[in-house]
Image 1: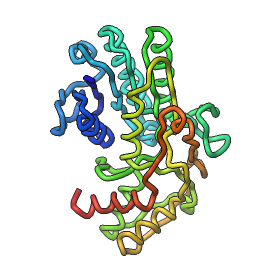
Image 2: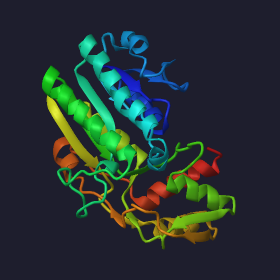
Image 3: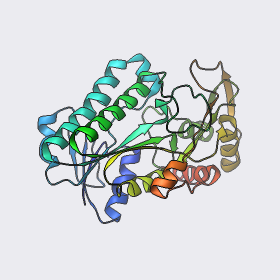
Image 4: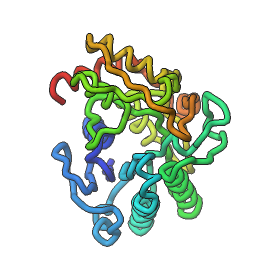
Amino acid sequence: MNILLTGGSGFLGKKLGVALMQAGHRVHNLDVKPCALFPTTQVDILDQFSILPYFHEVDAVFHLASYIEAGESVEKPEKYIKNNILGTLSVLEAMRRSGVKKFLFSSSAAVYGEPIRVPIKEDDRTIPINPYGMTKLAMEGLVSSYVASYGMTGVALRYFNLYGPGEDHEPETHAIPRFISQIMQDKEVTVWGEGLNLRDYIYIDDVVRAHLLALELQDGYQYMNLSGQRSTSVIDVIHLLEKILGKQANIRFFPPRPGDPMELYADSSKAGKVLGWQAEVGIEEGLRKTVDWFMRGK
């Protein structure tokens, strides 16, 4: 297949693009940042005139281009609304005008907001509690409306806490790479609350594998959780990293953050039924692989 990636220069995009090529697909990436792993055009997806030519003879689009920091979205909601929602609209319009029918994209656990129960199922209440989560839910709505209106196939994959080798944001706000760096450098490890919040960590290779399986779906709109099917507390993640690194963490506890659920983990049995997928890499194995990548100097 001819595959168009948006946001392919990021953590997931790089892994996915390489996996697609290894599976025999042709990949082209649209991103504001460069990427040397596969053909990339540096362009803003909001610029529909500039991106339109790259949709010619494309079989499927993986749309990963979005801002992802929930905290920043509270401070800068307009930035997230413009890039995430209007950016998705721009891509969908380019697809419609070019006759591209298959759209797969990164949604998020943030669409659920404060869960009414755990593990979370796909048809549970979706009331986002930050602008980031709202944009992801709006993106899902856009995709489902284009599927219904224009005969497309749409797939929304709702990730939980994605982690693994290659995660290297600047600045780093995600828990696992931040904890690893802080422990390795003997810096203070910041924890909000008592570290008892339960989270659902999902390893990068498992998520990439789900994307390749989702590429086979035909017709209609599908949305599903991608989760590790187990929960781990923040403090237990730190203790596992202490064990792997052979170093004690200098933990400093801060007051709990408002709107930070105590439990956030999912049921991913739908992905099992629809895709034949389940997470294979457990949290300790995944942390060891991630630490090894950091120890090798990234």
